[in-house]
Each structure stands twice: as structure tokens, then as C-alpha cells.
Length: 622
Image 1 (cartoon, rainbow, N blue to C red):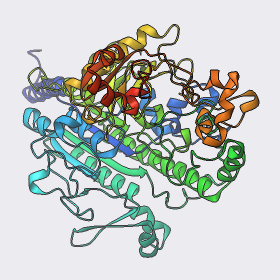
Image 2: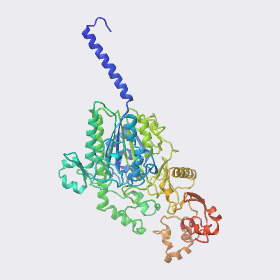
Image 3: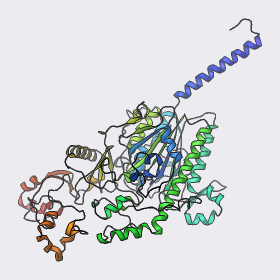
Image 4: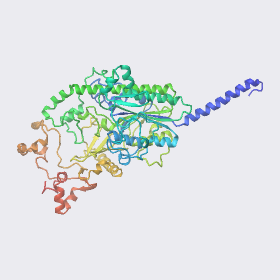
């Protein structure tokens, strides 16, 4: 310092140096400080409705409801542009409660006990909020639908019970379940929810609807919360989870979003058309919702039924309202992201966008979730953190909801080595410099809530086991993005079939999947040698399937060699057997059945699922 400075100037200079040092220390500390975490979860959201996911698809898949029938989502797309997109992120179970339980805790439903919808999560389950509060003193808040308390509390009560807050300090705007369309905070601070019909009467102006419609209400409270945190002197890191009930039904949205897509005509998805025509026939685990076209429609009437359904007011209105809900959600995310930016919090906040499960929106002739199909069990998953995650990253490797907690913890600086988490840590994939992450050998697993099926998933393949006389299914998204063809044990697929089956059986046993509890039912581990196709027949037998010829009046047709070759089981023309099956958590083969004492063998063979599978060993009784 110059000795010729006046004392007053010297004091000013020293003050500036001190301020600069102080600023440098704060800046350095900010760089190492735990980031804020903002989690945005929607409900039953089809990933095809996000532009950033459509950009990864061929045109026929991106525009599955018809050419140009899309909804723009620039704000959600910005998260992918400025952060990372996971293209094969799966829910652990495609239903609200079990999926949310796994997301919150990083454990399977068999561990956290949120097994099915309306079954409460165990009282001592530890969520990410509780651990973040304990380890790094995060402030925690949850706004929106919870769906983790079963029938313990009324759906109309806001705020978590004191003994079931699961680490969230602020739950004033949390409710247990219900897809309420309007919410009102009264002058005394109490909060009340309304159905769409009731809300339309109470909130009778566009302005009041904008304040009270549930998506707007949650967004407004989230913006207030972020502004309050930004103005806090302590700047304690926060974790805020927003759980929007849209675009799950009821399919109603406020104006102007309720008419925004009236000019669009939605085509019935091609994978549903092919499935209804049994070209090929969908598997038994492919669900049909009550208002969709029934699977039992005669094949010669399918085209007519599809045209009637596609042009119905019900189908068109539901699809348009869904797009409206999604557009409002995107606009709301844009408002929240702007609030972070206005408060200079963008670089210091991890933003996650996902959905509790997918929503098929007519695909595979289904309206909702519950199947292993991509847009049912697969979810959008976007994450932005400018400080650490390179912009524009694409992760193709398969991950699932149980991987969220360990990934989040490692991003914010929590040691996970002794936490007993089940999932994998994706943080290294996120923060490294590689812009495309791909590991085709990483499998994740889905445990269907009622044990109707279980699946192993990689970035390309999906392997499904189920009871009900169903052979194993192997889907190949690279060859068949419609997920219609079963490639199990076909030429070129034997190794991957065996590898994924082994991995799934191990995971099912280790984590007590619901399918393992269906002890009375036989689960085929191989394709029965005599199993005939369920697809529509061709030639002289068009518009029929093998099952039609089980009727006594048509049995004579089985004398025709052509039909006998197509339908060997129906025509009782097959005595081959091959393969393994699982029953009562034990593994068997037909050769073992053949070696059983006569009395036991007879009892087993009279069980159709075994007799049909082991037709040679059970020839006496089939």
C-alpha cells in the first residue's frame, strides 16, 4: 500500500479490501454450499406430450395421435436443453401410491409397504426430506397431492398429521389424495378443495379461476415460497416438492386451456388399432379401461367400432382437455423457472421434473396406467443444475424411481454408504462431460402393484413375466417401438432373453415382488412348445382366432390340416413339451413332473396351467 495515501483514503481502501475478501469467501462458500432442490411431479403424464421427448422419436411415434397433433412445451423442453434428459426412466410400479413411495424413500414397495393405491406407507419410512433436513439442515416443504396415507385421513383435510409428515416441515398445502380441480385459501388461513363442477359455480370469473384452479394455486404458492426464501437473510437451502394432480382425470381444465385444442382431431393410436385387430394379439397383461373399445369385439366389426370411438365426443374431448392441462402445466413451470432466475437462484437450484407414472391416452386401447408399456411405466425425467450438470445431456441408460434418492443425495453431498438404499447412483452420469450416456447392460425392475406381472428393463429391451398362462414377453424398442411383437427366445434374442429372465427372477426373490406372492398360479419361464398364437388367423380363417374353434359347433374344422397346424392346442394335435415354470416360489421342469409319483403327477397335470405346458408328461389327463 502506498505510504503517501491520506489516512482517510487508506481507511476507505482497507474497507474495500476487506469487503472484497469477504465477498470472495462468500462466493467460494456459495460454490460449495448445498443447492436448493425443486421437484415438480405431475400425475399420469404421457412422455410423448413433451417436445423434448418427441424430438428423440421418429415421426410416427412422435405424432401417434395424428400428423401435427401435438402440444408445445417450451418451458419443460428448456429443462432438457439446459440440463439432462433421461429417455428410459421408469416408475417402480405404474400406480400412484407405490410409485410415490419408492420415489420418496429410494426403496421398493415391499420395504416401504406402500404396496398399492390407498395402502399407507409405513410410519417409520425415511424420505429424502427427512435425511436432507437431518444431514444438511434443509428447510423442507411439500405442496399438492400426497397419496401416501391410505384411508387413515380424509381426502379433504389439508396439512400432514404431526406423526406422518415424513420430514416435510411445511405441508399446509398438502392433501392426501383426490384430483381436486379448485382450491381456496380463506381469510382465516384454512384451505378447502372443490370438484370442477363446484368450482365452476363458486369461482365465476376468469380471474378467480386463475387464482383457484389447482395447477395455478400450487404454482402461486410455490412462487411465494421461493420469493420468501430468496429474501431470507439466512438463505438456508430448501427442498420444495410440488405434486400437481393434472393431467390425471377428471379431464377438465380452466379457460382458455379448455378450448385451446378444439381444432385438433385425435386419431386412435396405431398400436391400439393393431392390437384390437389381433395383429398381433395383445398379451393378457394389456389392460382395457371400461370406456375403451372392448377386447371382445368381433374381428370383422373392429374397424367400424374404432371409427365410432375415434369420432366420439368423449374421446376427442378427453384428449383435448388432457392437452389443455399439459399446456397449463408447462406455462406454470415457466413461471416458476422465471422466479428462480429473477432471484438469481438458477445456478444454485437443482430442478427435477417427472411424473408418478405414465398415461397411455388411448395407446394399446387403454386410457391410463398399470401396464409395462413405455408410456405407462416409463416417465419423463428432466433435471437441471447449471452449476454441475452439462446442458443438453442425454442419458439413455435405464434408471428407475428407486435410483432418485441416492442420485439426489450424492449431488447435494450426502454420504449414502451407510443409508441402506436399494437404488443406483446416477450422479456421475449427470456431472461427467460425456453428453450421451449409454449402458445397455444396466437393468432396472418394475413390480406391478397387484402381482399381475413383473418386468426387467434396459435401454432397449423389456422382459415381462406374468401368470395366467402367459408365456414370457421380450419387447425390443429398437425394432418395434409400438411394443407389439414378442421376441422372447427368437433367433438372435436367446442370450438377452436368458440374461434378463435371470436378472428379474433374482430381483423378484431378493425384494419380494408382488408376483412372488401369487403362489397358487403357475408362471411360465419358457415358451410352451405347444402354445398356439392368439393372433388373428389368415387365409380362409380371417377374422377368427384359434380360440373360436374350441366351440363344439366348430370342432370339425380341426380336421383341416391347415387349421390343425395353426391351432395345435385347440385341435389337440400336439404332445410336445419343453421348458421350465415357477409355482409356489419353486422352479420346475416338465421332466420333473414326469418323474413324480402317479398320484402327485395326476393332481398336478389336472391343473390346466401345468397340463397345458407339459402335454407329454400329462398326456393321460390333458
